[in-house]
Structures are given as C-alpha cells and as structure tokens.
Length: 199
Image 1: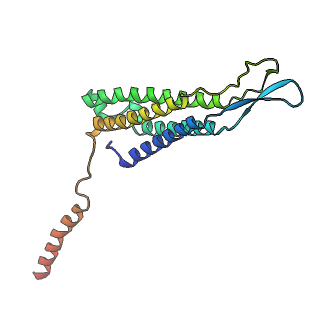
Image 2 (image 1 turned 90 degrees about the vertical axis):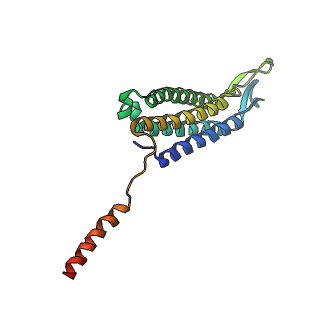
Image 3 (image 1 turned 180 degrees about the horizontal axis):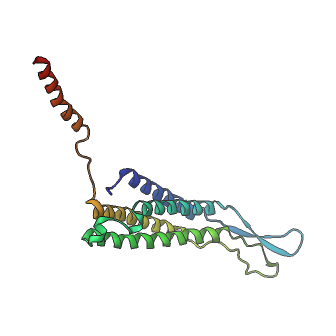
C-alpha cells in the first residue's frame, strides 16, 4: 500500500478543522450569572450561550471520522507484508499506532467531557439569604487541552500512516511506464505493416 496524497489531505483537513473548532469552543464557553426570581425568594442561573457545546461535539465527530479513515486504510495494523517481517519501519508503525490512539482518546475525552459539562445548566440555587451562590460552568482549559491533543493526534496519525505504508510497500511508489508502453508497443507493429506493404 503506497502513501496516498488524497487520504493524507483528508486526514489533515479533518484534524485541522477539529482543532479550530476546539479552539472556538474554548473561547465560547458558557458564562452565567445569578438572578433573583421575580415570584419567590429563590435565585437561579442565567447562561449566555451553548455554542461551545456545538463546537466541541463537532470537533469530536470530525476527529472520530479521521481516526476511522486512518485505521480503515491501514486495516488497524493487522495486515501488511512488511509488518510481518518485523522491520524497523514496522516497529515505528506500531509505536506511532499506539501514540496516535492515546492522543486520539485523550482528545475525544476532553472534547466530550467539555461539551457535556458546558451543556449542564444549574437551575435554582438557593434563597436570598445565601451569598455564596455559584453557577456551574466549565473550567478553563478543557477544550484547549482537547485542541492540543487533536494536534498530537494529527501528527501521530500522519506519521503512523506513512510508517505503515513504508513497512508495507516501501513508502512512496510511482507507477512506471504510464502512457509509454502503448506508444512503444505500437511502433514496431507500424514498422512491420509498412514492410509488408513494400513487399
């Protein structure tokens, strides 16, 4: 299996979009304030936006699709001629396979946990007499950690795909004699038909 530029482009694009969405989710985290209820002596929290949850779940989905593509193309490290031989490229592919999965799982955990926590809204909190009320919001840095791990997952996936391809077939391959075989094959036939006509 040779390295495919189109597959690399899809993997890189999906991971970079997921990275941008994770950064957007970090910057658009929900904020809240405590408001007094008009009808009784209770207080409740008012939240401004849930855009961060949408960004986080979108990044989660794109990163998952990218990982499925990588492992689908490489058949999840289960097949390949070079992988059986135990070459240096095969060892690198195994190490990068583990690294890409660890970074992928870490990124997915941050994105999913951050989205779930950001979507959680505190309702009624207490009475006017209590002054230590606080609204539940997502801590700073969860989506940022997910974005950083998304970049690491991108690097691990690309390097793993390259190492797997190298172990399997020797890396980049060119198709030889494309378009040349037909012209060289037809030229002697034209010469032979010309000689028959002269005879």
